[in-house]
Length: 392
Ligand SMILES: Cc1cc2nc3c(=O)[nH]c(=O)nc-3n(C[C@H](O)[C@H](O)[C@H](O)COP(=O)(O)O)c2cc1C
Ligand SMILES: C=C(O[C@@H]1CC(C(=O)O)=C[C@@H](OP(=O)(O)O)[C@H]1O)C(=O)O
Image 1 (spheres, rainbow, N blue to C red):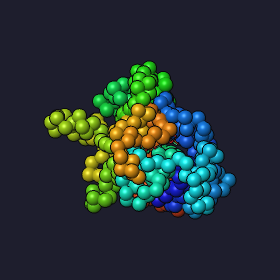
Image 2: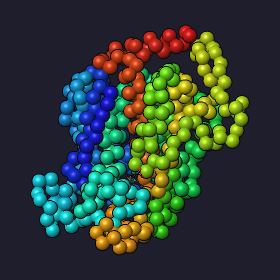
Image 3: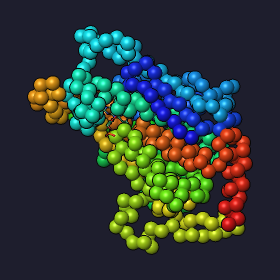
Image 4: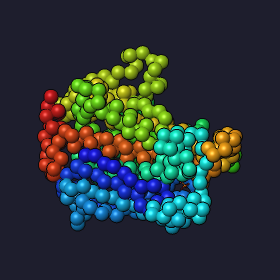
């Protein structure tokens, strides 16, 4: 399975094309729209989310709510495009009228300056901004929704949560220190809705309100947990087959993500081996299993079968309404950075995006290992493999 996205933030459409989803997977627009709505929610987002109501249209690859095995094209319309149609016009030469919203004072922390230098966009850094914007993550969440549907067929669940926004931590922060894996799964499932809606958490809300009233921004951490995992996805035999490495790349590939850890990795750095390794047990009923999950579900780049626990660090939003120092790319004079309409924080959305990225990497790994032509055959093979592992 592979996918590509296309679309500018204020252009007419966002698009994704996915290749390699097996035929016969039940897939409805409501499945995708539910995930898109989760990405749009969350306290601290700017005015743009009030304009957009993200809804998917299947342009190819789906018939009567079932995948055909052919490439699936997903389309989300940018409602805000109405307000930008002149500025984004693809087939009009540049004029005084359609270049009104030029960006000439690059924002520290955004892609503006480096993107402008690299692609020679010296006329207008908007040419960078339009694609570097996290608007594109809409389509990653749409692709992730398809991946989640596929994973659900084999009992794999993926959930993303907010750990903290700035100094305000949610209950989830304690969830890497647990003993009973089943209890952890239940707690996190119960937590899913509330944690994503940072409105429900007073402390988080206060931090965001404070940042906003200071014309500042704030980041945080998100955690993704995946349960029902098969043993042995990914491989130790080559560095580029390691699934933890693929997931790390997918997480850091999300806009504004600057760090990633599996299990309690950074806290484990000052501990000793006997405090960290996940001891091995065996029972007739379960086969081999672990008593803990300190390593986050990976050994040798392969899934152990215990929940995958991965955390990402999201930096504060770069655009500040009280802008930082920059330089005008025309005059080379010192100026405050450009101000673009912006979020105060996007950590809640980031949790949904990280969840989608983990789901995509897991779906890819499953489809690399098992039949990718037909969903029922894939499920039969997975079932047989799970049985074999249990009897090991
Ligand atoms: C969901 C989401 C929303 C974002 N919203 C904004 C925003 O409103 N303003 C902004 O300057 N950056 C925003 N960002 C961050 C920028 O997209 C990101 O910092 C920029 O593309 C530079 O990439 P980098 O931070 O990965 O280096 C957002 C990120 C995410 C994940
Ligand atoms: C549009 C989305 O996020 C955008 C991501 C973003 C950025 O610079 O990354 C900047 C803002 O764009 P705008 O100036 O159009 O409001 C965010 O709203 C979205 O998440 O759907």
